[in-house]
Image (cartoon, rainbow, N blue to C red; front, side):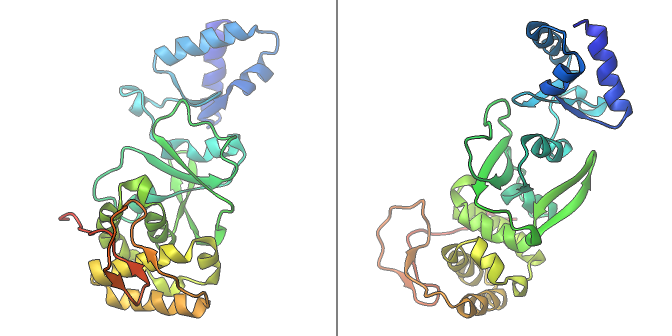
Length: 270
């Protein structure tokens, strides 16, 4: 493949408003070009910060305002990438919390939740992306907003709050979770929590979230609403540990939320 052919092709994509492409698209467009020639051309353009590989076989055309760093934020391409992978998704955890002004400190990772199996999602090529996997995606608890290149999907405030607790290991523990929740809960309305959301998440996560709201963040009114939802759900609450990260043995218990308090949660100063 001649470099100018690829250059013109990339320019034509940009003209049409297409900001990403795959190796498969190149193969379809230039079926007679040897594989090594394709690799060489892609390497040259990558080295010139013209394109960047953000996933195996998937490239982003770097816009001028990101060219100096050579790093394109995932919000620029995540929707197109997930269409390429062929899986539903939502931006989650700390990355979703940022959309509600509850980032506190910007995370170095970009959290994306998609469906199982995990084996057909590559973790190579892009250290920014932190993948989480679930059986189903709860469409009714997702929000959309415009991005530079289209739209992106992210969890609503209530799902984000529950996810943060459920995936405490991914975000650095319950103290960090509580720090983010301290800002995020201003955007939460736990009266919106229903049986469908409780089925999608886990009762244990809601127990832990309720405890944090009531006893760490002093948001008793919101905790009471969540507790009523949990009781109405009809599942028996069993005693569980507050933090899955801690192996500390304890006799301290919270009888309302049925928790063995095996860790101390402290929020950072906001």
